[in-house]
Amino acid sequence: MTTRLDLDLASTPFSRRGSYLAVSRLADGVFLRTVRGNVRERDLVRILVDGDAAPAAVARPGLLSLRSGGTEVELALAGSGRALVRVTGGSAVLDLQVGSQYDVVLRERADVWRFVASGANRNYRLAVTGSARLETGWDGVKDASARLVLDATSRPVVVTIDEFGISAAPFEPASIDAVAAEADAEYAAWSARHGHRDGDPAVRSAARLAAFVTWAALVPPGGALRRESMLMSKNRMTNVWAWDHCFNAMALWRDPDAAADQLLTLFDHQDAEGGLPDYVNDAGIEPNFVKPPIHGWSVGFLMDRGGLTDEAVAGLYEPLARWTDWWFAHRVYGADGVPSYNHGNDSGWDNSTVFAGGVPVQSPDLLAFLALQMSTLARIADRVGRPGDADGWRVRERATVDLLLRHFWVGGRFVARDTPSQRAIDSASLLTLMPLALGDALPADVFDRCVERLLDGGFLTEHGLATEPITSRHYVPDGYWRGPIWAPTTMLLVDGLRRGGRGDIADDVARRFVATCTAGGMAENFDAITGEGLRDLSMTWTASVFLLLLATGDAEPAGDAEPSS
Image (cartoon, rainbow, N blue to C red; front, side, top):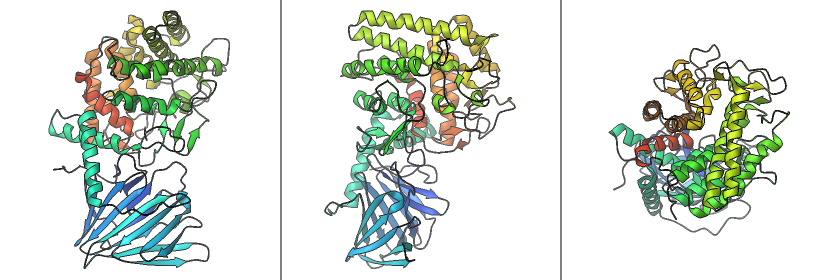
């Protein structure tokens, strides 16, 4: 028997692995939406149940039920672009969203309609079994309104909605019950492998949600995506960003092939010079920005847990090396040899106070991540039988840590610098403490001073680590990287604290973050004082970090563990 999923459609969309469709509760109703990459208008169909735009919703992984009055609308998803809708016991309306220029709904033949959704850059075929009629209003250019009215008072009505580009495939009917059962079984297998079943009931419920968020965010290969890839969200953040994917890969350590796919989905678009795009989706890439080079750290994390095959580890060596060298070849703007961020977006901390005075900026986290990447490259070189390369990377790692200390350690703390003037930037941002991710690669006295500042500098709250001290004049409760708590920074610092010998603090920070997610869901970030979830309320890297922190006891690092094969 499939158990109910505690799903709030206002925060977590109903979707499934492999689908570009999702159902969300928005301000004015429940909508079937598209999450493809080249879309101007995502909302496709508003679902009215017995005239009610806010029906009650009950979900299991494979089936969503919307109820009002005596009417029930059930919805299941299949393939990359099919939605099956069944109406029983009354009437429902599929209010087709024809707000974009040139949108039109037309009747192809009896009981088959086509929705030309110009705003979604797609076509949708609606094939109906049962009683239905279309009500439209032509304004001379497009349909001003289009409502498919479904009457199930005497017998159920089933609507099959199929997405297509230029040409529709021949129609093949499917059973909504069979499709839903298939999705239920698929989720159950995913949750058993990647989820978490221990702890108190609230934690177990949150883990089920986290497993659903990650599973449902997977989309198939196609377009610019060359392998199955996990979107950051099926709400608004419908891309794969070039550091977010690392945390999702890490959470899949029990399935080495899946973990490798999540890592490689960005490296598939590495340019000739070694640079990575800011993000990728099925429609293309964003080339204007990059993201911080945490990839070596994440590969090392997976290697510790046998989370990558020998083949994948070997295949990542050259891409990681080129990505490391790219920073020194393309982002060093002076004679000091220190690379810069061109924008806060490059760091992943878009609006951190480190960037408040302008760009480019030299930030200490960047050299720390590059040193971690060099450490992983040395490990890989050893494993693939290139001892000379391994020695070279270790020399470069030590030199990079030395450069980090010489350039950024000022007055007992790390600072960031304005690249052109070299002045130290007046910022208390947690970004300047990210060298803690180096763990025991930092000198003990430097590590200890950073830990002291982490604990006493206004960062640690009941809910985790604020990105701007709550005592700072620049702190903003919903300030993105100027206050809220984030999953990626939590994971990097927890790991660094453990490797630096402060497992006590790491465990405490992890406990606080797990409790915050258990209470507030898998939000993009959290209010540092109240713990309230903020912005996109269903993010995969939050779900992945939540599951990783719960699994720490099951996956303690054990050096160069033998990889799965």
